[in-house]
Image (cartoon, rainbow over all chains, first blue to last red; front, side, top):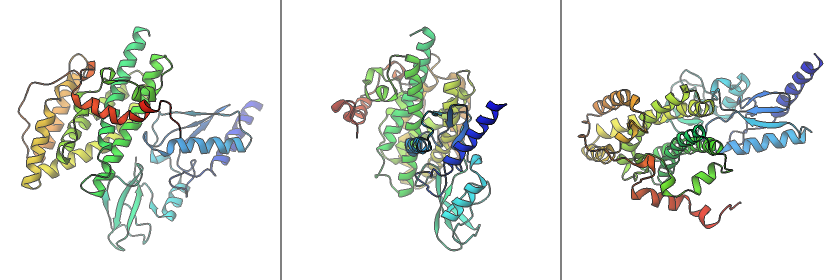
Length: 152
Length: 241
């Protein structure tokens, strides 16, 4: 019982620490909001990459390591798991709000909503955008182009 | 290596080499594509493939157990030790030739990674499950551009036909009964027939398939590709910055 209570609190602590570690490409959102941090076992933090070729993966690992070390958790290990594969369904509600406020349309199954004027009257310009996780869109009301986090 | 380890190594190396060599080929388009959106697309597809290659070659190195890692396999092997299919090493040519290679490859790649996802090897399955989600985008991109070029102007149509003609002789190797995936052929044939019909294109005439990539017998193009890709690690082994 004592052990169980201890591991729950470690998990909560790790999630709290990592909720302040921003994604290096999209700094408005934390690695926890993104769903990269999957679980915490007795001595290991399990993380998962977003896209296999995402160049930010190594930077994210290094940032997580630094944050854990600073919090005095130097002995806790980091391990990467691939299965089940990361999906944008794991981005939190908070993450959706932060993305939208930052100017990136969050990944919803419906049509992309313009983060500038709120219109749903938008079109896709390019399915591949400035990073592997984003596509490029245009608002047909205010005419501004914007990024959208791809449903993945 | 045990026989089991050896088989696993070969399987993972093939998957990794296909992705690595095509990823490197696509990276040659970076900064040269006909439009910004295409530049972004080809670079992103190349990046996905190099990411997949890193995982597959990492798994191969583990299966081998000789202390090599994914980088050692990518940068310290010579032509004869690469086991990619001949299709992926073919030169980019013009944009239509690149799209011809991509439409033939990505449709096969998606079917193959689905099969690997369902297979019993947990490590390779996990990599394939991630990869198959990415490859779904590659398929859509290549199919759409095949239709756009085939059903576009007279010029784009002529070029698309020439591109398919160039690439078609490397298709049989993908389905070779010995070291390919023959069971995937009917579904691949149906997919390609559908895209070509939408594009208003005929299937290229059957010709004698060229094979050998899986056994290290490559076209002259691979050596030139490796000389560029491996230059830094060859000239400055273990360079760090």
